Image 1 (cartoon, rainbow, N blue to C red):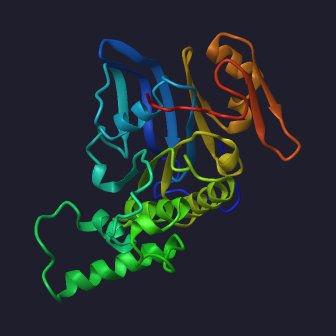
Image 2 (cartoon, rainbow, N blue to C red):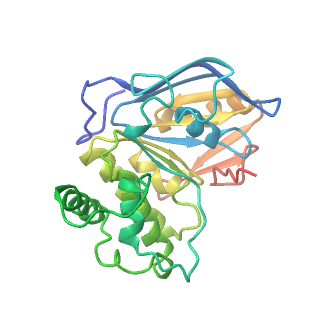
Length: 282
């Protein structure tokens, strides 16, 4: 698949960031998915879609090495799952911060850089200046400078999400894993965050794998989608995957995909309510 105009790849040109062949995961005696074949190219913006219970978040956790494969193989950034986690930024599913939380946004971002260290930072020194510089850089990158020094509980959901994306970026990752980052945001903030993630993918040459609640806010930015279902998985460009024929085959039941006047998609039938690719993870 050729890249859209202006889209860059990570070093190595056509290298794969994630490759899965015949992958299967079993949790609590239940097979979540099997026979999974997925290719995610370096520098691509990829959405993981599908209804409840098909294992979208499980795929993210398998990439991180947190869930082992029962069979098949997976390569992540050229090695086994979990081996390159220092080069992966991860934003898990979340709910909003408590309104009374007084921790500043800038401190939330800094935790992505040194939150795994014990004790207080030493005063002065080159490392502290370097840390401060990098934190300020990523805050500027996500457009959060105006509110980063306010308590995180006092900023909006969209502003919180920008700060959390900055936290995931602060270590200069090669790949971002974002689990429903648009969930609970209004339409305006969904569009804003989707545009931000696309720009980061392009400008920073970062591979982005995003679990989506609704594909429409990100549809125009995607290089490809991974659509999970009871019939396995389909991976490819959105125009080839999100079709009536492909989804009907994947779900073994008639599915109709309609395109709206503004270019959005409406999926009618079983796997999910119209226009939504829902996954509530229990």
